[in-house]
Image (tube, rainbow over all chains, first blue to last red; front, side, top):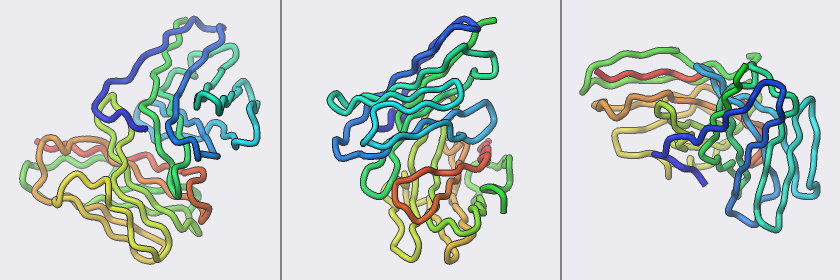
Length: 110
Length: 114
């Protein structure tokens, strides 16, 4: 669920390393999951999504992993670049709506 | 339009004044959402419109907040008697008629209450 009122956790990685951002969801009935990237001063942008009939989906330099047993979602970014610095949000469907996680700030060190 | 459009992009107002924020969703999107994002924090759900159904207002923080939507197009979020704690970015998002599916966000309105 949402972590309104809490400051965002931060993940700091070296340029070129792989990044893993984790997210837990609470609704076992959720069957659609999505990751967003939010750069400073902009609205969230879609990165990748996955349905519950899959446990892994790959995009360009990004992979989403879904573990329904423990209700856990992760986003892996390969060869992290400075342009990947942003806040990343996961979301899952709850009934007719998407419910967002609290977000993780990714900082890429040159 | 090509994307979700929000206006104004920035709004500075004095405490106690009313403000109206506008959202133009992607054409054909039946679902529209408003979120609030305080500095350095996550997305706080405010209100959700889906077609002609009654809106889900469960996230509105007080009766000073209200929103309207004209059919399946423009929405306005109104904040009456603004307070300093209302200062935040207000984000609008729209999606197709598949419930709980991918949202497309606007760039937001940065509201500053002095």
